[in-house]
Image (tube, rainbow over all chains, first blue to last red):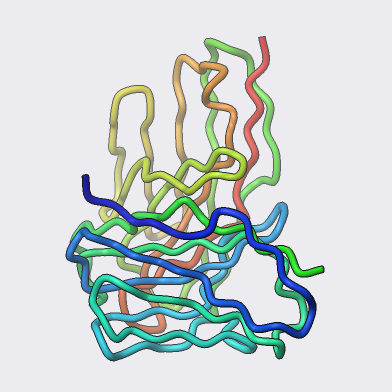
Amino acid sequence: DGGITQSPKYLFRKEGQNVTLSCEQNLNHDAMYWYRQDPGQGLRLIYYSQIVNDFQKGDIAEGYSVSREKKESFPLTVTSAQKNPTAFYLCASSISGELSEVFDEQFFGPGTRLTVL
Amino acid sequence: GQNIDQPTEMTATEGAIVQINCTYQTSGFNGLFWYQQHAGEAPTFLSYNVLDGLEEKGRFSSFLSRSKGYSYLLLKELQMKDSASYLCAVRGGGGGNKLTFGTGTQLKVEL
């Protein structure tokens, strides 16, 4: 079955520690995305990657870093510089990262709930 | 800039019809998506509009007016399992296949 996996589902870290969230897809999609969701709020884009070895900052990139060394993997590191990291993190992918009117939905992984103590 | 507005909460009765509105002001437009999200889960795709008019998909329909910056999601024959958050998202502006999401409308279906 094709899909997107995120691990772990729940993650606890102490304040000041860096933590890396995993995202893997076997859909052969070029584009991948990281979103953050806070209670009662919509999804906010952290980083996105239109193709392997390339990525761009989204709306709230400060305190986060990513890499895209393989097409199927897009890990997100939450650094100690992120002032309020406790949130629900969602990874997504789409066939293409190019802007067009062609229907190209984003598929989402199950999410990782990060709690910083 | 990007601005997407949806009502925060709505309540409806099982078996009824509900309309969830979404208005947007974005620097570009290349399509509007509706997603459903149950609490603690991933959003799942419901519908897509890029041209003006109505798209029907079973119990769900979505309408778009690009000139008015307006869309709605219509849910018919409501079921208890339809209780969820409904997210409106616009593609376009700022480059790439990025989506800008509204804050979501929490729908509660009651008996």
